[in-house]
Image (tube, rainbow over all chains, first blue to last red; front, top):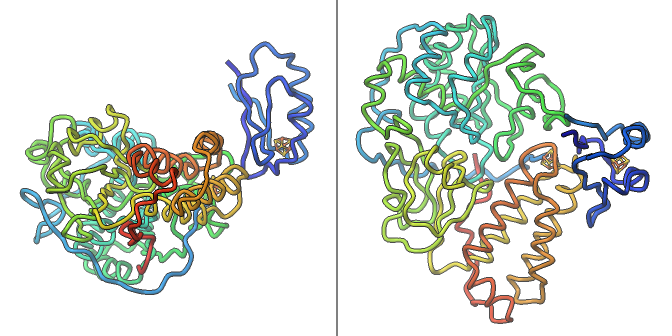
Length: 62
Length: 397
Ligand code: SF4
Ligand code: SF4
């Protein structure tokens, strides 16, 4: 099962990813993304979120 | 990232004790014959030797993962603030440590062997031992930074003259270590055990300890009537023997470890792991009656929060919030325990290194183990005891 992963040394918590992919990403008390399984989400939408991260902090892991 | 700042130099070593026959702390350093890599892998496998830095990774697997020509890093930076065992070993028995480093370096035909330490006393003892040993590849390097949990990627980055912080995406030293080359990296005590193993052979090595984990371990003990102490103990002994008459929760594994109320545990990594407990770098602590347990936990929590050098959001912002909640509880002020648990959950597992997870494990288990005290504080009836700081926060090196 693929899941989203974050490079915490890069993520600055602006939360853009959570707006683009609310089905799979929520934000914690401090505005940092909480990610999990991608499930059967549209890969193109996931790919857009990954590519849109201004800090290149988001990736898909096997 | 977990980095310790400057501390005043109070350099008193804790007392040393051995339970049963000493091995690492024996007065005489044994002759360590050369052994090749295959011999070491096989012997380490037979005695189920586990790394002594904290992760307890099988030494045989790690050694087998690097080929000939790999670099060697001996980690003596002892990041766990409550731990003393590595410095005791390096200062009292530097020849055994150096013999272990030379043994592994020779077995791997390493072009470079670095022993990384964070205190001048250990560095001097090791340098003298390196001169006696005569292996010119061994370099003792004084590193400026220490990391809770001995985060190895941070140490390697520091040795490579980069910012000594953990990498964002994990790369293990056996893939890319010193100078970007494959590296066998382990804790100083691991190297001392490899030296003993080469000297004794697996059969004699296994004449002490348990079947699940032959041999001995060094333990740093806090909070008993002995004061701070370092002990060498054979695996398999009852944990309760270490803490003597004390009744009450025991901290196992240091500030990335956990508090437990169990009294039936033995000192043996595989058995503890089966019980869901990590031995870490071998720090065991109990709290004497006179000190406020909630205050002790809050104090360490604040310290753990201060260690984050602001690389990762949840660790940077979450740990200080949690520490502040604990401070309020100590003061008998209002705090929402459900909220606190939720925040702890939001920090756990969310960082580039193990620090946030280790820290929240310490805090959450402490709140459970001292539940009655926590409830009394929350009900506005704090115990009135002072927080004596039985759990040390770094201090001198
Ligand atoms: S978009 Fe990227 S930087 Fe922004 S919160 Fe998401 S992962 Fe972090
Ligand atoms: S998780 Fe915390 S301690 Fe670890 S690298 Fe990130 S900020 Fe530093």
